[in-house]
Image (cartoon, rainbow, N blue to C red; front, side, top):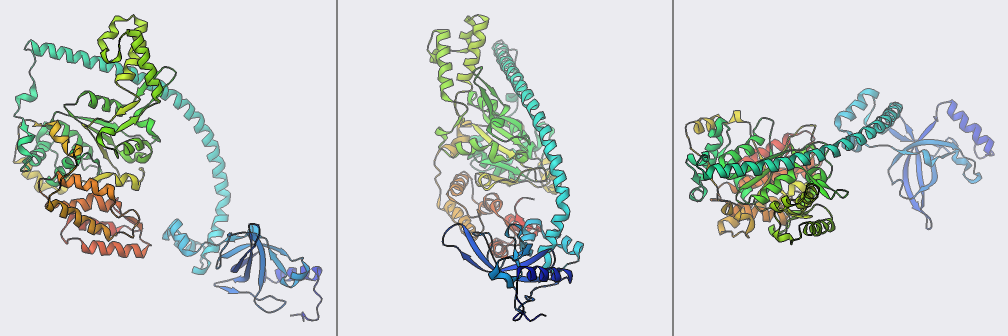
Length: 613
């Protein structure tokens, strides 16, 4: 060690000294620093960072300045709030050239400094398996995880760059193909619109033929041959649910097996106009339940709509308006809404199969928003209202009569060219108005898959849904034997006005029903520290409508916890405080309840405590 008191420190000697330190291995191409103090400048957007040089070994320890034999302290100026006290940085340096700082020997190059990731950050970002991979790959200690991560990143950076170039090329090709697909989709939607128009014409003709044959005595209404069971006579004592359960098994020889409580929850959720989401492993009969309901109830029609993974906005669900032709190209979903509006005497159930193949809140946003309003104020805005007004005026001019008096028959008096134009405007006004009302007699159901191909449900969707989890039929052999031994003839007659009434009126709760809500809210309050888990005012209104429609409240607390509270719970197991909160919640649930069994299963997940599996 030279005597620094006698040594004259110059730029040249500092350069030589630093080179010597590199040669003997004291310094490498990079240095490791720890921030000890941050001093914000009074003016400007920069800070002075005071730090110490660390020696990178099995543990981070302070390095001594070879000139002073004291802890090696350095300063540098950089962007304000770039780093905080305690951050460990790695980056390049250069020889110090400023006269008053020559004893520092080196100065950091701020633009090259990278903050080392800490162990908990790496676990949160990549998981514990990745951290173990780093330790095994580089045979390192816990304290060096940040350096190992940087080393791993550098070794993969070149591959990443090559992949990004390939991705860029592929994206260009995809964009070109997407343009072609968009063009074909527009052509397809035009063809579909024509097909639907022909189908509507065919249905009208079929109905006219049917009515004519009926009037002449040639047609028998098969469903009336069977013994129809009136919903009015069954709903009071709960026999209607049992009849539904038996009907689901025997109707058309389907032999579908569902627990009594599942059927009751499903029917009650439909009556109160909840967005019902059916979840469970593949093969549990989610879509079949919806389809078979339409076979058992009369009058009831089920519309199945297959959700596509490329759906990104509401046009994928509802279709779109063509301003050049002043026509609307509907989807099967919107056509189902039109059918429900034109058939007020039937219950219409629209089932979105595999609803979470795409982000629900993207394509279903208009419906989610509209359903928050009072039933008589639920509208979908399909296109700008001015096009509707123009079509209305044009049609009145073509037929020379007010719109209120126009019927489809009036179009026949026009010549072929004008009739085609009038038909498009007639469809726009009477089938697809700009301000489209959601019919009271339509209900929405979604089936969910839980695998790597689907999108997670957002808290917004979960909050607005009633979730029912189905179990595999193989676990319901006792129920199967019971259903096989019973039989019910005919369909269940449905009074649609009576069925939808709970969704239209404000719920009136008995003291017993109010107690159910209070108990659920008491359980919910335990989860107040878990984000989005505590029940809000919207959820309370949903529960009040649901409970008010139950013939009896036995078991209602348990099923509301399963359907309205547990699906809201989601947090990483690394958050021990939240895990303790959930443990306290589970401990309060009744020992033999379904909700407790489900909550215990949620705790088994390795990384995230959640309802979805």
